[in-house]
Length: 87
Image (cartoon, rainbow, N blue to C red; front, side, top):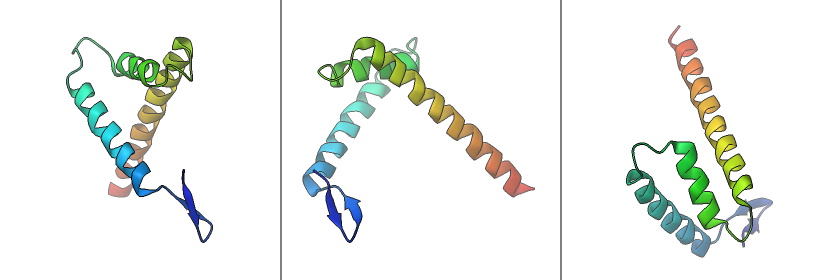
């Protein structure tokens, strides 16, 4: 798992490689998703599939909803900061 160097936690090269592979695979899946499917639906299916041993489908949907809401909040905050900076 993660290593600690001088009190800071880092991931190993193997973990970084796995994250990169997962990211690439899931980015491809996202690009190919049906246009009628919402991001929340897609993410819920991804969580259900990838975390089937860890969480229920209901938990996967909840996590997907919370993730999408967090991204929307981040985007709104980022937009607000940029607008304030322009002024």
